[in-house]
Structures are given as C-alpha cells and as structure tokens.
Image (tube, rainbow, N blue to C red; front, side, top):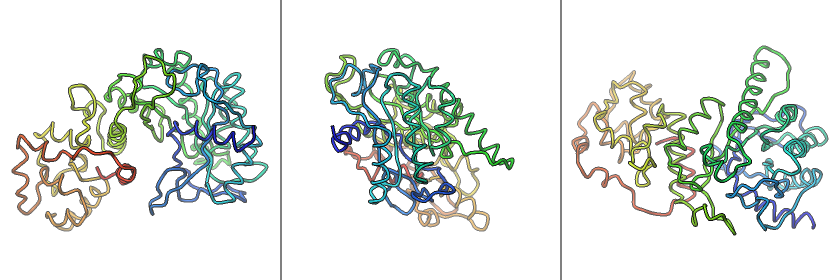
Length: 417
C-alpha cells in the first residue's frame, strides 16, 4: 500500500478525535529552522483575527488490540487497516508544511503490540522532527495510558501538547463499552503529565535551563451520546478533570454510529446542539464561576436544547435578578445572560467614572435582547418588568434549526455567553 492510500485511511480514521486545538503554545522553539507556532492556533481553530488554522491530523495506525465498542478501529471491526512508518509521518509533515497546507501535526494511534511500543513510535516522530529537521511548529501527541513514565516524559519534551482521552464520562460507561480501559489508569496518566508540566514550569521560573515539558498543556476528549449518561454527570467529570489534573481543555465529541455496531450503542447521533450546549456550559465552568450541578436545570439532568445554559440558569433562578450593573460585584455581573467576561471587565472599568445606562451596554455590544430582562441601569429599563412573565422562556427560546459551524465557532471563541 502506498503512502497516498495510507493517508486516505488514517486521516479519515483520525476525524473522530476532536481534541486537536493548539491554543497555549506560546513561542517557536529555539534553534528551529522550519515551522512556527507564534501567536496562533492550529487545526480547525480560529485565531483572534479570524484565520482558520490547519494541521496534519492522522493516526500512526488504525490497527488496535483493544475492542472498544464505540470505536471504528476496534480489533473486531472489519474496517480497512493501514500503518505509517515513523519516516513516512515525518516526511508527510514536512512536505505538507512546505506546501503551506498545514502549520502543525496532530498524531494519534491505535494501540499496537502494547502501550510502551505504541508510545515509542509516537514519540519517535516528534523527536525526529525536532532534532533531525529542526522543526519548530506545533506538535500534539496522544499519550497512551500505562505507557512507561520515561516515555511520557520524552514525549512531553518534544511535543507542545499531550492528551489522554478519558473516552467516556464514567467508570460504569467504560466497563460497559471499553472494559480494557480503566478510568483510574487514565486519570493517573493525566496526573503524571500534570505534575511534569508543573515541575517544568517551576524549574524555569527558578531560572533553571530545563527543557520545556508540553508547554501547551494537556487536553482530553469525552464521547457524548454513546451511553445514557446525562449532561450533569458529563460536566461533573469535566470539572473534576479541570480541578484535579489542570487540563487546558475538555473536548466533547458527539457519538457517531459506526458500521456493525454493538447492539448496546444507539442507532443515531445525539443532536449536534447538545454538543454545542456542553461547550457553552464548559466555558461557564472555566471562566464564569458556575458549578456543574447548578448549570443543569432540566428534570432529566440534561442541558436545555432550547436556550443556552446561562440563560436557562437565569430563568430557573429569577429571584437572583434583576442585577444592578452599577453596583453589582464581578461574580454577579458574570451571571447576567448576554453579558460576557470581556464586557464585565469593561463595565467595572467604566463605572468607576460614570453611571452606566442602557445605551452604554448596547455600545459594549452585549446581547441586549437577552440581557435586558435581567439588568437595572441608571435610566429606566422597561423590559425588566417582564422578568416574571410566565412565557418569558418561550419568548427567549431560539427557533429550532441546524447549528451552523460558524455559529458554534463564534460562541466558543468569543466567550460572550
């Protein structure tokens, strides 16, 4: 099989992994002669100036010794198989970069032989790129739970970001669909990476010229909709990972039906808007001070598909409103629907010099159609009288429609929720 045929198979097999953003890799590596990560993200991410950045996103191989029922590459699947050599991945990365097709590499793999052997192969790609070709661009490596700690440490030396997929939200889900994978082992792998990242940063702060270890941090991915696990549990798992393992990002991937699937798996994907709501809720966890347990207001413990999580919380907690934007603290302002973290920062700055009016909020480009029911300004805001209306939820409910890519990108990158 030639490299072109392998690429067709292994690039397609990598599409199910969403955890490939590169935000957080700050500088091009010293001594580099090719590749740059300066001030931008990689692959299906949008930079602050609106550019879409790409990377080569492939598997080293889609052979796998595991039989995870939700995975198209499981050992019992009859999917076409292929495997790259280390040299082939290195060559592809460099050739694609020189042709300006990509600005980085996201490399994952099925597990072949054993975790240590697979991790050795993944690390070898990054090491050859860095040491033999002086490649300074972004590299994201998937790390393998149960791989030797020395291999993980070497991978973090050459890669900008590492990730270990949590796969499914709960231990029970893993036992049901991926019994070879153990949640404690996955979390332990994350913890080891987190400790090495912290140690590397502390050493550099103290002035030691120690190698950077995964400077863009680590991320993970959870599959959503493969099991009945509700959003409340999914968000609690994400919160635990952020708090305990200091992850940079948790990515949520809607389950995609696969050929010859296990009877325990659903026959269709969950609504795309569910994945979008989880990303919105995730943003509220990380930057708005919300707790996972309070974000889910529906009786079935899932996020509302009709309105965004912050608005759903506000409608369920109307006794907390209206909030006076001229006197409320930062934490209270962050709870107002339609007013994002950047707008809150501007409000706190502006009100040091003047009282804030409705026009001021509109000039700040807050989502006034949502915010107006929940705020008090120095001037009269007639919409606040409708806060107790029984049909306010219906009034604010968005029409049911297919969520478009750029709607999701705009919401996820702006932080204005």
